[in-house]
Amino acid sequence: MVDPGEQCDDGNATDCDGCSARCTREVVGNGVIDTECGEVCDGDDVAGQTRPGGTVTCAPDCRRVDRSRCPANAPAPREICGNCIDDDLNGLVDFEDPACCAASVAGKLAKARLKARANGRTLLRLRGSLGGAELAASSTTEDVFLQVRTQPGAELLCAEVPAGRFERLRHAFRFRDRTHTVPSARSLDLPRLHRGPQGALHARALGRAMPLDMPHPGTVQVMMGFADPAATQCAPMKAPLRPARAACARPEPSLLRQTT
Image 1 (cartoon, rainbow, N blue to C red):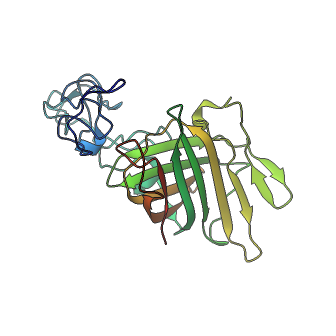
Image 2: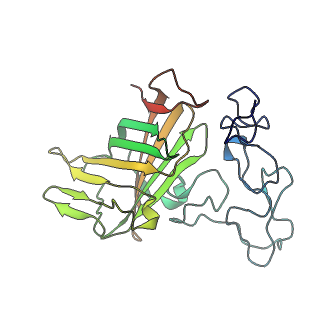
């Protein structure tokens, strides 16, 4: 039975079978890129892909971008760092892509929590350690990027806090935007960076009403990138996610948190 607010209802919580777990229709060519189903484009939406001297179109199965109308000697697409688009179509966006990250320092995700809000938005809380003194990041001179995705699944968030928007608080730097006046921050309320006594760089992020879809349980990957024209640095962090409680009215978990 199709309930109010649903486009379809096939009685299961499976994606890519024509009716998604969120009860929306999945149709090839509907103009919506269903990344969880392997689509990289759909209809006229080619995810911002361009090619000098030719026309880029979406293949009929929506699983590849067709460049057959482009000159054979046209340069290969390259990743443009900082636009939140997978420009070279290798499945990696911005600072997930080695082309955008000259130096990567393995971080540790201590906390990840996503909770569905009644207004359709999502609460996001993250806390982790980004590395030691080898991560010479500066939020006063570098744009700070926060990317979140689940595996398997699509990217949930790509947010940018421009250089200079962090305020200094003794041993920490904080960006506060409760009225969401910085569009590129994607409704992040309070990212915070501080150095620990051993030199480790710690990060927290809070978004009380983020425009994010609730993911399915799996592995959450958090990437923090510090964009510097001379030497961009990145800190990837991963952890498994599980439903925090079994009972929920929606087909997908309404609350996910990190498991240890």
